[in-house]
Amino acid sequence: MNIEFDSYKQKLNDAKPALEALADSLNLEGLRRELERLHAMQEAPGFWDDPEKSQKIVVKTRQSENKIERYEKMVSSWEDLMTICEMAEEEDDDSMLPELKDGFAALTEEMESCRLETLLTGKYDKNNALMSFQAGAGGTEAQDWCSMLYRMYTRWAERSGFTYKILDYQEGEEAGIKSASIMIEGENAYGFLKGESGVHRLVRVSPFDANARRQTSFSAIEVIPEIEDDSEDFEIRPEDYEMQVFRSSGAGGQHINKTSSAVRLIHKATGIVVSCQTERSQFQNKETCLRMLRSKLVEIREREHLATIADIKGVQQKIEWGSQIRNYVFMPYTLVKDTRTGCETSNVNAVMDGALDPFVEAYLNCLASGNWVQK
Image (cartoon, rainbow, N blue to C red; front, side):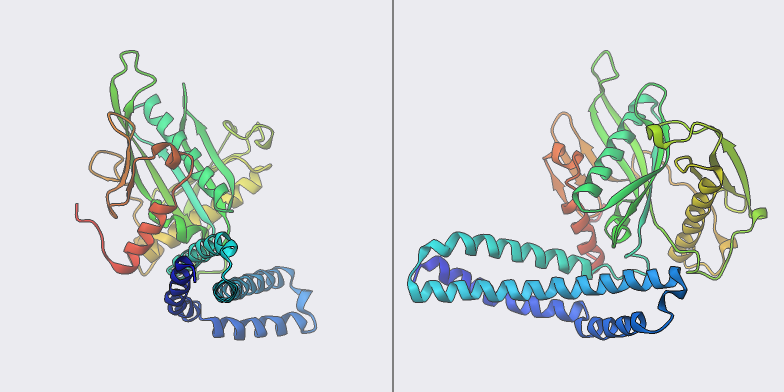
């Protein structure tokens, strides 16, 4: 038998325990029982009497079905690849080798992707993600860096099968953006992006400097989960915040209403500020702002293990040297390096085009194992 087939047969046997372990990590039997319960609920009389509740059940059903189907496809793929090995052994046929190589590579990639998803065990990991961008000090240079990060994350979202929606976008005076907020929608969006919160540092020769000097710029990213209105036992009352109305501007073209419909809410107790300008009416922008504010308050309360919202303080992280979570060096060499995980690559262009998966995966693995780089 071709030695390569023998090698792949051994690799498949070695992969089987990991595949079986995934079933336990996914709680496959529990998923099947839950799916039976959800199907029974959908078949019950009056299921559609409450459209909002029924829609949530339909979404949950589809998510459970997808997880089960995904695992079963991996098992089927493993079995098919093992069959190829056995057929090649019987028929001494080398023509099946390319199919075997491609199939095994696809299977191991899918297993690793599934394994990473099993690490998303946080309370809000499955939720949509609210991502905010803020340029640091440095004027046009920092604002240009902020817009580069904005493009990087929206490209990552598109490549990863997520969708995003612009909530707020404040352009810089000459180039770039001062600040922006987007909603990244899709299952596990927050779980994958939660490690991206922090200060990002750029080193490059500035295109805005006539003397072509090397510049260091900073921008801050904040990622919080979108939290449903009925998920916590508190409410935000009108007297808890100040509402400001202003004229929409910035990216979005025809999707931004150019009247004074943009809304900014300032939470009085904490000083937390949220704004939205991309909905079609002032009322819609206000409702979006309230969801954003609520999500921020709940996330901070959970993260700081606080008993009440009143204990939350709106402390802002300094956007400066020494506080960065990742460095992006364009000059005198090319390197992107995470200061927490040690993950790095010299392919800066790929990273800026949205190739962030190695950094996301490294963060989740470190979170699970506790193996962080000591600064």
